[in-house]
Image 1: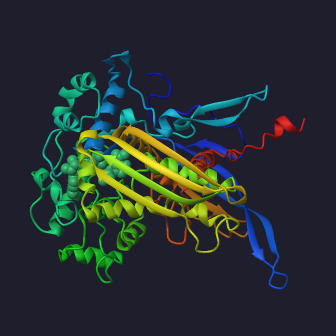
Image 2: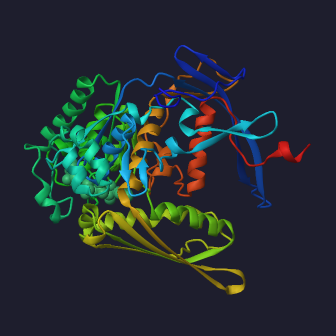
Length: 522
Ligand code: NAD
């Protein structure tokens, strides 16, 4: 195979006394520089103190065999990503009006973007593929499976989705038609009533029995395919929010008891999260609802299992998290952000119901908070731009979503600046690469442990995994779930920088910055 087309390929080796390649792992010593700010009690002046923290990271180099189980496998995203990975894996090209089209991974930050490694002897930048900084799983090697409340096989589901070009559909159909989703959990109260006709592949029994069946499904999928690890991802319909009720879903034990009692407020997605956590399978929520209720997060922490969410950040919100950052960092004050969406796929149909729309509205709304909060020259405490979100179901546009956004900002001397954006795109072609990135980044985090060293250590500190809530996935998510007392970052450039520099830290490389001192100081 060509370099980079298999799991675990890396583009370079680090030559440093602080990096060791041994025993199936890369181990790095890393000085983390931060600035601690305090305020002088008497003068009120800010004091900034540079500090260093000595971290050690250990990254297992063997990726092993990894599986991805999608909840909502037969949906537009699930069938599109499955068909696209198959086409990439087998090098299946197809005919279009413009000629032959080769498969690719465009839109995946891991598979189709690069990271600056450093400069060569002529001070020219050297870039490497993002997925070759540390050993990562390659999507071509992943075994895909999953559940759907609809029994349609993945070949037919791909046709129903009407996303991929018809010649490609023809070429992958035979291999996809043998893939059948496992029966799933259907509690009609959580998704729109208009989804009912799809529900012909559902588990009978109690909530506790459902939980046990999902756990068995994960174990059997792992065993049947000889997998070292399975990652579970929710790409099923958007659910309504679950009420957070004391004694029901507020703690790990209460949540487990609520499932045993068959409590009505435990959603299907939370049941999947709990099943995954108990099986040690990382769980990522690609939809906006509050799947990761406090009890689920506590359970993940207790079981040292990984969770991430919420809601794939695909089109409109991705642009918003770029544009709002640009405006605010340019000293321009957004006054109103107004977003309209028209979409005609099954997701749009489900979102035409008020409770499901409300979940999406919440997840789309918080995306400029961190940028607004960072600039107290433009915004007084508590002040916020108007932010309105409208979603309408327009069947004839199908998966080709329209997103219309207007940004009205205050500029110099009270002037106004209005930016208007009109975006058309196949929704599932945006979301599928995010599924791949979430899978790859999550898988990586299962192989990394760290410890903090200090001169005062009497005994060696223990290696430990990162926090159960994977905030490092934020780049791919609209409303990132983070660990308690951790800031939420929405700004896209910062989110990308976090992934890039954490991966560099794993191999003992300093963070990338744009100082270019080597060009300025000679
Ligand atoms: P879709 O309606 O085509 O697919 C969802 C699938 O989930 C359907 O096949 C449905 O039968 C199945 N399903 C519903 N409830 C289920 C359950 N309890 N268990 C198993 N399967 C179940 O939707 P889609 O376009 O693939 O989007 C999937 C999700 O991703 C939606 O919630 C959507 O809001 C979210 N999302 C999509 C995008 C995007 O496509 N660009 C972006 C962000 C978020």
